[in-house]
Image 1: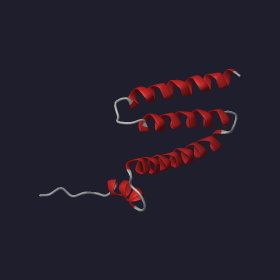
Image 2: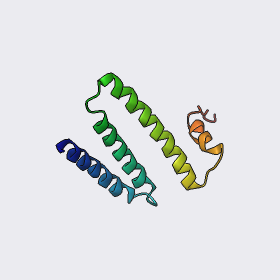
Image 3: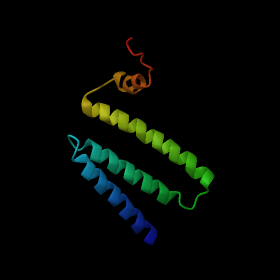
Image 4: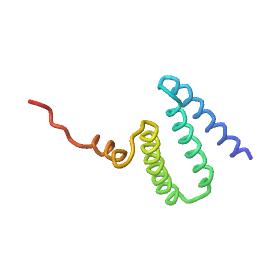
Length: 101
């Protein structure tokens, strides 16, 4: 019971911080994404608290990558970007650009 209460408090503090930072940005998207990350990370830590570390680390990385992909998709949908353009935006950001001489 104590562990669950501590996890809820930790997630609540992260959600409050995201809400405070979300007031800087237009709309509730940032606060929603931070709240999802807080609940997901604290929930995963709570679920895997007694698991061996060699299981926890890869699952954490997979969940983080999955949530990152979800955030890209959800943000693009909120911005009105559809189809193949959704995944070309992050791909374009990794291209090397040459500076004009």
